[in-house]
Image (cartoon, rainbow, N blue to C red):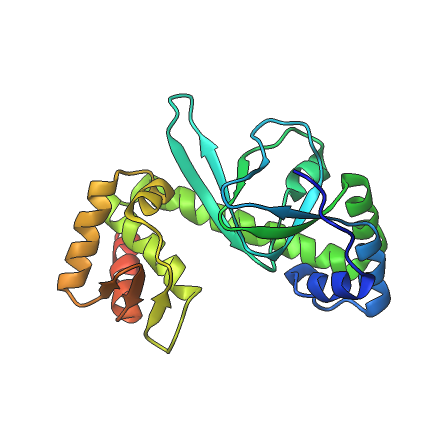
Length: 240
């Protein structure tokens, strides 16, 4: 992945200030971080990190979206998550020094800042606000993955699809009980997120549409009744 042209310190600080873990930092702190970063322009579908490789940089998404995936020995793709601008990735290897645990691709064209593991750890040890933000991020990831393991272990396929739609809807709220997802994930992507097949997703979305919970319009998806979708998921979880 090539390094893009040099970015001014002012522009670099402005873009880094949108990263969630850096939003409370002072200007001098942002300048210090910017000075340790390299910038990369990625094309759609370009590979950024490969599973098991030995690179150790941390990446910050200034523009665009990326996708984190894992492939089983049989070649089946599992989508672990999608990350948008303001997020970071690659911190696990930077912290524990082990090989990469997943493959990361550019879902859209993207502008990324990268930092070596040494510089990343130095910033964590020298700045308590960054350290606190990283700790909260790791705790949030543990909670998210714990919920996914629980869902995969206990919920039927239809319920896993409902739970995934609910997670996506909560990130795209347009009102107290509605959400608008544009563009919506494909049936194939949802299937890979919940470890099932595309036909199961098609059936469940058709059922939710008949019950006036979702509405598909072209590449967009309207969640018409988040409360009802939440109750469906919670009722199944609570009965286990």
